[in-house]
Length: 257
Ligand code: NAD
Image (cartoon, rainbow, N blue to C red; front, side, top):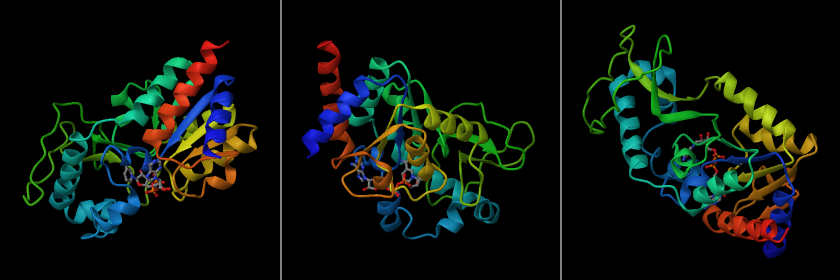
């Protein structure tokens, strides 16, 4: 069944003009970054997300939240894109009209060479100030130790503390990224959805937007998810295995033309 799904997916991609690859935390799992569910048992287990990933939490304990994010930045900096990220970048070179829409904040798609990446939930290596949202444009920031109580650096423009430019609970997604993601979903011929449980709104709607506008949806996920209902094709394998295989099959098809 997976073989058939891979071949049919390669056929759909080879004939498509506009392709979106929409990714979630499962995309980065094989790079060593825990998914949200894994993290609830590991990274987040000792703390409540309300303390670490809300504006209130940051205002209450800026040094603690800053050093917790620094520890996550340190972990992500030690990770590299895997074969699945590289396959998505290769797909972008084979199909000129390809965009990646990601819920991930780790920057691994760009690191792998994908050029058109829409980051719906921000990027952990970008910073802005808490009060005015002034972007930080200075030198890369160091990783203070998780147990130090060093306060976050101050904004060079207004002195307000710097925070990671990620979307915290209760916050709006960046409007331009949402607008672009919706346009891409409405206009794609094929959407490949990789490694998302399809439970975080509004990203979870994207496969349904694509399907309802005539796009074919292909899911890559070893487990059933909230996306499966929208997917015409399901490849139940890990991203690092399925995506390179998909690209190999597509290249064979393109070469045979
Ligand atoms: P999720 O943790 O809710 O779901 C992960 C999905 O990935 C599951 O359906 C799982 O079956 C699948 N999966 C696991 N291993 C896989 C693999 N090797 N290949 C393909 N699929 C695999 O993730 P979500 O839907 O992205 O939602 C979590 C939220 O947490 C998002 O808002 C995201 O921004 C954030 N988050 C980001 C990162 C990151 O930047 N890497 C990591 C953790 C959480």
